[in-house]
Image (cartoon, rainbow, N blue to C red; front, side, top):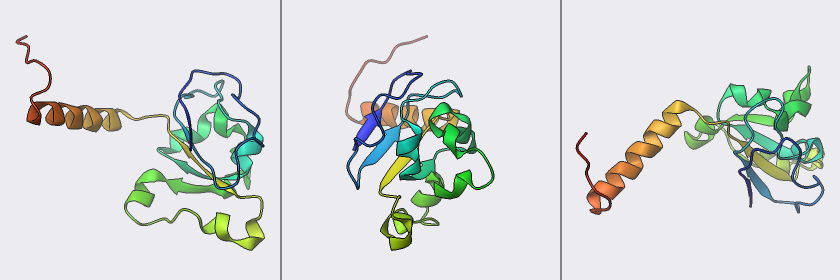
Length: 134
């Protein structure tokens, strides 16, 4: 598993470096000019996105065009709900170039709100932190 969490504008490593079966979480880049992974790696992956806006970031720039979205299997929410399955293309002998998975997240405000709520509830239940009057 590789997690990229930078503000890089250029890929951090060559796309051939990750071994077959690798999973990449790309959460740093969030604009069309930013890119943490190269096109070669993206083309090797079943791509999962958090929002459709993720398709506009530099990491996924190679997925523009008529048939370029073919290795984007869908939204993370659809996988969590069981509507999509990861690995079908990777396990298909006719898709020999697909040998990794890539989750591209650009973040959404609702994810931040739910994450903050979960952290707050955990801290409250475990008597962590301090309450401050404002």
